[in-house]
Amino acid sequence: MTMMAKVLIQELDVHAYHGWHAYEGEFGQAFSVDIELDVDIEMAAQTDHLQHAVDYGKVVAETRKLFVERRYKLVEAATAALADDLLRFFPAAQAVFVRVRKLKPPIPERLTAVGVELRVERNESHDRKA
Image (cartoon, rainbow, N blue to C red; front, side, top):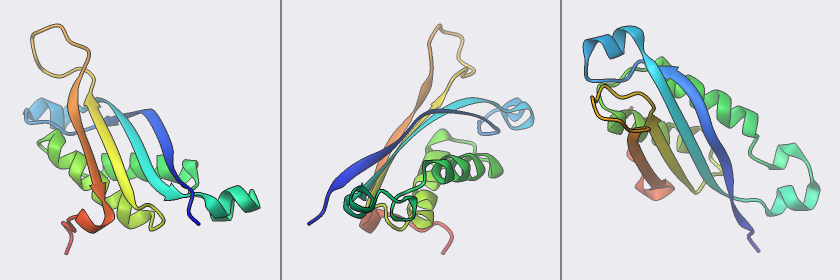
């Protein structure tokens, strides 16, 4: 039996250096990241032990590290790389959903955010490091 569930990380605020304009790469800006990992929680539910679960703290730490340590010109590229990396780092995840929002984009109109949503299943992941 499987018990598929979503591990949720919502509105993780990070300061990163993604952007097309030179000043975005120099000064960085605020992003908000949402993560959903599709995992089988049957063993974790039965044992009530962290070793059988996806550790939320590790998901947050890896997301922050993966999203900030590299720089991309496009949010699309940063989002795709993050999704692939999370699938690599968390082998229990069968799929990952990533939403990245740039909170103060260099657009002269009034808006809350711009961004990209991406869902990647394990068999669809593109290994950009190979």
